[in-house]
Length: 169
Image (cartoon, rainbow, N blue to C red; front, top):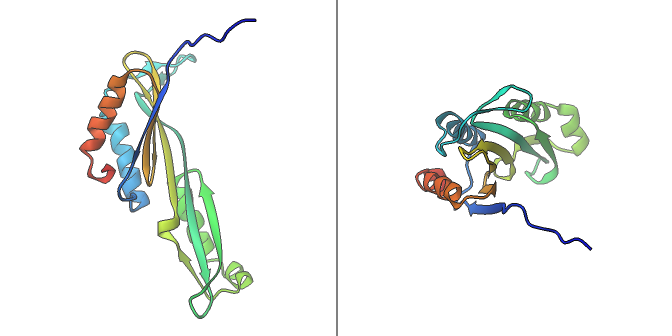
């Protein structure tokens, strides 16, 4: 019987944020700064299809808006969660639900309000290290996760950067 032989060592590290990222705009600005500034020293490369790939790219993302429906006394009588693939869709979908009088009536509500603290943001960045390894930095409102890295120098670079970003304390 053949044995499994370890070929690589992929690691994961997580930083829990002391304070959740407050708004989707702040979240997006943080993500875009990583892509634009490339603080981890990633390098671009040519994909297997011959197409150039940037050093840091959005790999996956989704944003969940929450809307609460309230009766005339301010009591919550219903809620809706809307998971969207982009921030533009997140905002448009929430606005659509807030303006939907038929839905509010069906819920028995007189008012609809966004539940900002209950909303979630998720964006995973794919980073290409100069060594040739790909790793991922995943942001949510409450965590930053580094995954699929092998070299501890990558963790050190991400951690040093995060230490300098106030929102990631």
